[in-house]
Image 1 (cartoon, rainbow, N blue to C red):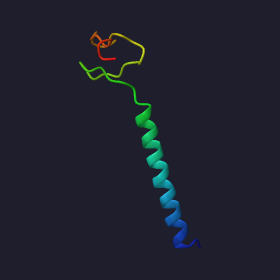
Image 2: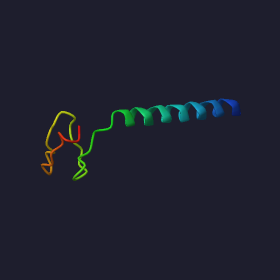
Image 3: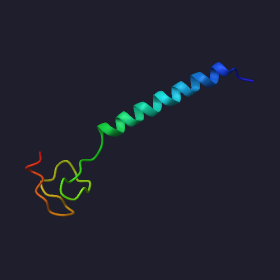
Image 4: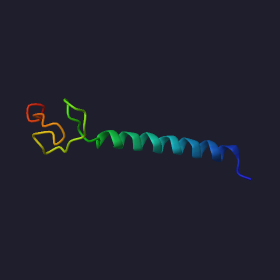
Length: 58
């Protein structure tokens, strides 16, 4: 039977992984249109959903 220390170490590793994954997700988050809140690609000047001018936002 594994010792309690094994489970504590595994728990710490899981928490570290979750934090790293969360930070990576934040770094790669898709920008949102300030007018309608829809996700928009980085390289567009106009929101494909509502037509808002995004060039002024960049």
